[in-house]
Length: 214
Image 1 (cartoon, rainbow, N blue to C red):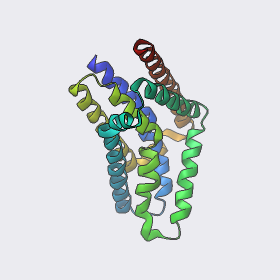
Image 2: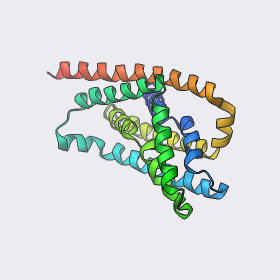
Image 3: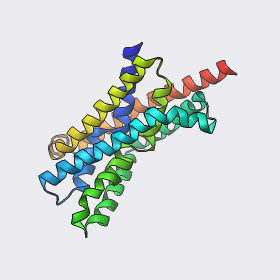
Image 4: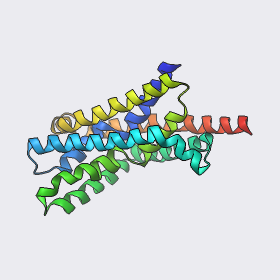
């Protein structure tokens, strides 16, 4: 049971955050930066994104309680949000939106190279790493943790995903050359189908829980 939960958590977060897919975005927003500057940006972006996700891991359920939102209701809402993201991935709309966000950041900072490190906050840390879908997924997965071990396992999964983002940023130029446009397109669509299946499972679990509680 624990292994299934952790595998599901890893697949959901990996597909939602998509560390490999962030590599071209990283290159776009750090164009013109030195290797040392890129390393600093990569480290800062992953620390910021990771801190936000861990914040919602710890306080997410408390926020739901304060707002009076039941876990099953959030499961359904989170599943629907992830389903929308999956559809965007399958039809290649999400990468275009991410590219537009990256391009805006480049234009905003082009005239101020000394402020280049700010892209670690926006758009890399937020919303490319810790976006609405990733935050929703973290709260959703934390609500499904059966015990403390599962909860700590989820924290470890988040740490691994954030570490993957850092590695992807460091190897961004190599990843882009290795994958190419066609391979990246195929991988994105396959991951989109996987995320769609996982999101439907979240929705079904939420509906089942609401029926059982009602």
